[in-house]
Image 1 (tube, rainbow, N blue to C red):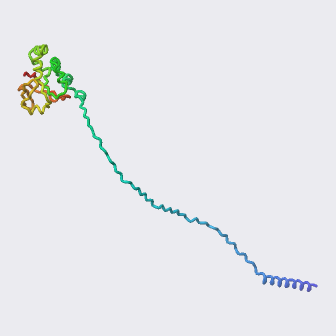
Image 2 (image 1 turned 180 degrees about the vertical axis):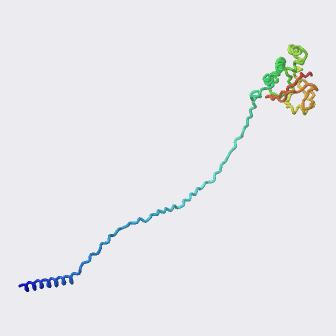
Length: 223
């Protein structure tokens, strides 16, 4: 009984072995192929935008222009401003403003010569100062001013006036100067000092006025 069971088990084992061997022959073992993970890497190629600008040629055609200019006749009008409107004082105004010639201005007004020496020139006045008039004998000036005809006063004053503008440099070059009174004044110089008629000294020069020039003198000239 036991031997039957043994053989039966053996037979089962053999049969199982044969079956297993047959299965192994017909169905080879399946080898699992490892799955490769595919990583897709997208690389963005740098994009270069190349813009080609076609050169633009601007051709401007300028038509030749002919300009005809007709010059209208030009009239030049020159307006001469009166000397007393230039801002510079005339001879009488300058003498009044100076302060050294009050007696001379009084005498000019008394002889009615102030209007002449205020008008257009040009004049040169050798103007005696107040100190120069004080050198005259007492009462001389009052006598001349109060003379009804003013003949001697005018004669004396006109002997101090020249009918043109003479600056100090001009005076020094002259030997004599003709006055409006009619007689001449003699001119000399010594050590840079200019003298009239030998003894009258010019103590201030070139007081320029709108209608001439004043030179101050230290003595009244006698014609």
